[in-house]
Image (cartoon, rainbow, N blue to C red):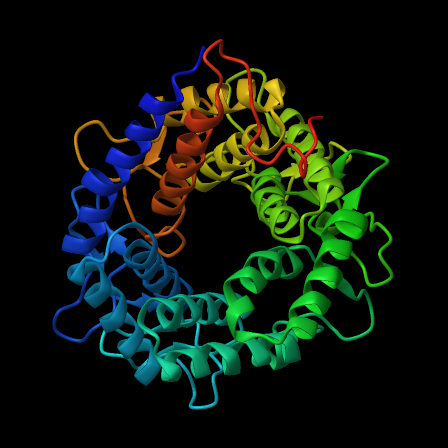
Length: 408
């Protein structure tokens, strides 16, 4: 039987005593502001360019810790100084957020990437909630408006595809909007919140999820049909699993039993689909027809994929009592903690080969920052804490809101 109380303490201690201090002490740029992302195994800075989506993620993370865990001034100041840096240098003056900057804030790459926008909006919305700042709230709302304006063509003028030949839409944006809308809800009108949520849930659960195959695909034709192309066959199990816990959170917010039940079912299908039965772990990319991959890193095992899968499974168990979710959480916990956690230095490795051996010893880079590990530890800690309160003495499951959420 799983000891939820001990596991909850394990995740809490790893977050607060290992991972958060690593970023707090090593990543802040005390000369120019903002954060260094490219940190070697021991926290040494090896590259000073600053990526806006990772800046926004770290602001959000420390603002969340301050708002949800403890009102520590050093956490607030870490979030605030990052926000002030990107407020001044991170966009073009009209809330179009660059992809990257030099250390001192000069633009390097144009604002082509919609996720620079989504994480800026998340950052300022959370910091506004934590501080009551009207200025931060205004930045979040203006950025959110920009996101919606670009939703039909996320890369805008920087899109490389020739117009009209093979128009497609991607899973990533409706997926992230499921989460962003919850972060933005206090700043939105109810009709606007409900409208975006209804559309995103439809896209995630009824367009990109293919009931006939039991999987979520990354790209579809504009009319929602499948495309027999590299992009059209692409499956990213980690994206799908991350999206499913976003959908579970929405199901709780909307008191929608059907949404929670479907999200749990899809999460279980995607874990089974993505698991490497030979070496363990979840594949990074897959082809829905089993054809050769164009992504050479397809069989790597990545930190965020496994952390997001753990969140999905423990939330699925907490909300429904699914023993299958609990078994998957146990399996993922063992794999993740035994391979990604660095036993000599703080923070976790990000990149393993298919066999589960460390490929890159870095703790931060262009794609890995202060986000998936601390957010995952926080979500698992809080969900395990809830499970410890709802577990009966005999080890059977007792739902806190059984009238609202059914067992599956």
